[in-house]
Length: 153
Image (cartoon, rainbow, N blue to C red; front, side):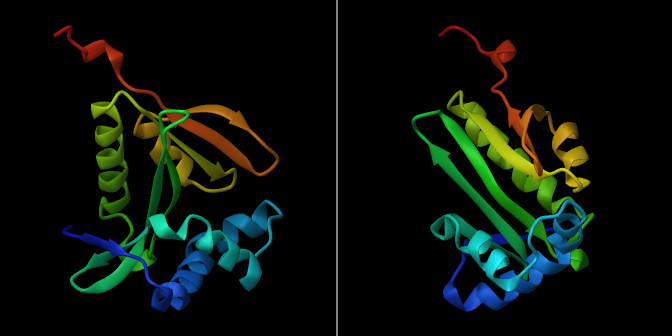
């Protein structure tokens, strides 16, 4: 499926609040995390300057938020959420693969956290992420650069 990314704007907040509720509400509730509007808004506004709206045929279809941390030489996938109408169409795997490729080009890793009750963990594992830690609510996962294919110049 073809999609595009654009910078998220304040005018997208209502869409993002709804998106968070329909894509994450159940998983957050199941593990005891807050599901209030304030909690959702706090997460949405976290690193908002890096938030991209995924669009399909001019309609908002999801959220993709990633940031590079120079100190750790790691991309952090802060959020990826796809509206149910657009799920299972390889949008998330395409975006994550693009981020992995971008990171690999600079010998960087990609990190993320996933709520323990969220089945997206299986997608991340299929894409090569490994669990490197956990806390009460989330698994911490990382995709390390593939050094096996590096050639000396």
